[in-house]
Length: 481
Image 1 (cartoon, rainbow, N blue to C red):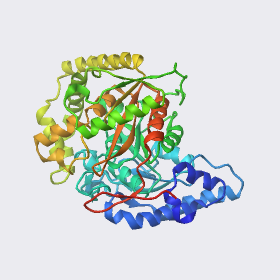
Image 2 (image 1 turned 135 degrees about the horizontal axis):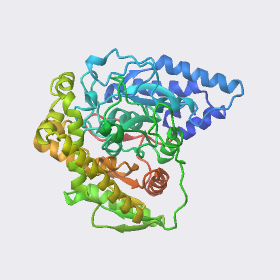
Image 3 (image 1 turned 120 degrees about the horizontal axis):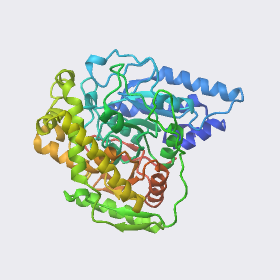
Image 4 (image 1 turned 90 degrees about the horizontal axis):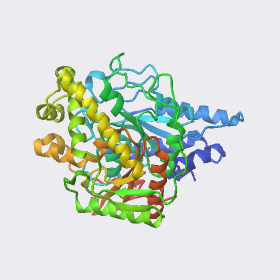
């Protein structure tokens, strides 16, 4: 079993540790060996926490030897996005300026995973300051490579976590998402990802300042896990959900809601907003819809989602307005060329005046209400995370056309983040050598419905990873142990 430890699901890894079939130290060492083999080719893990991970694993083993009950993620290695604090480790944001910004405490989601027995094994790469674009390229650590094809981006901003999970360097990744930053890398790398409802997971995003960010940052950014299977995603969800005194936004809603009348209705929109969708992505949505029909869901194609264009306009205007005062300072921290992505947004969308911002807050509520009514009629929505297959690295920062193309591609992610509802990204197969996938969106605080539907899709279509990266071409699927 030992040679195959890193290939196992997170659930199987934890069960093996709890049962004494393997030690947590053996499990961590297996992943460290995998990182040594694979990371030089994909550059996903940035700060390797090898000795610390081995120490943490040793503590898990000592607790088991003493007869203590172990948590649901006992010994399971996970990566943590460079923007999320791990106590005693620099939270660099991928920027040279913050190379030595050592975290004084674990972020709430890191603390929850550690309390469940999971072991942080390393930080993972991001676009510089999470702002340099969708492609995972940082000033401090360079480019992360999509393991399926080095000529395609792994997505971002949680691209390092997606690649680490897809290649077996970690069983779980902890990213965050404010408009696709978990779901797009999941689609591009062939793994599963969860963006929870706003307020489902506790968080504390005060890293660069003791002051809390503005309302857009408070409402839009949600931490979320990535995994190779929906079952592992569910396991992480159960651990991460809950309250924490550091985050008054986190609400004590049960992780599982009441059962809905069967069959549950699923609305299908392959081309949200009618702005175009690639045939491969449309095919992925149709494949997932067929899987859900086979599972007994009431799957119906609908004309469109509510207020797509209005939501995108409000999302852009509100975020630019909040960001504009700090932009002259922030752009200097992004490194050469790192400011192009945001600068193009600032040029296109002027900040709102105080009166306009108040009106936009009302628009935000109007859009949320429209979506609540839509999801009352259809508890689930099936659509793309990105409306194209994985694109070339840096497309969004190349020119205006590239930025608009990427912004359009992730539009359903942007709007569902703006609305604050949960979504699960799940693979559907491989098309022309690249992974394809969809997202299942649900009512607020009904992550369980999204996970159930994603599980039904996975049960019928299978999982795509772990895989071995191959430079310049399709990754090689690793046989299951």
